Picture 1 (tube, rainbow, N blue to C red):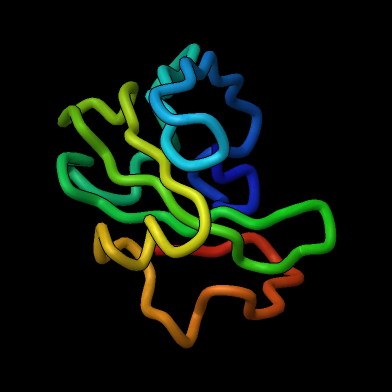
Picture 2: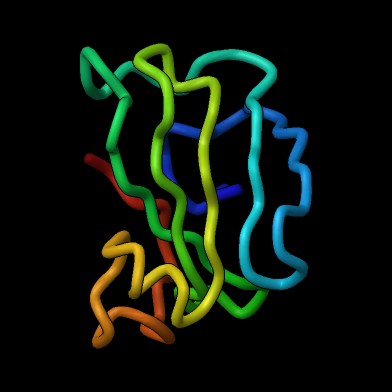
Length: 96
């Protein structure tokens, strides 16, 4: 899950592997910080341990509890992040 996004601060996710190292279905323990009224279709990048963008997640439900997450080029194909953003350094949590 995109722990680097400020809206997910303090949340825990349970994720199921859909395609190993590519796609995950994740459910949060409680809704994210309410930055928008409806999280359906909201995209959030993810970062790896070195704070580089490695993929992203897309909100599946209005309450923000369910997310579909993709790593690498699949996140670009899903249009969650742009190709130039993949691998970018992201040292601070993202907002909005």
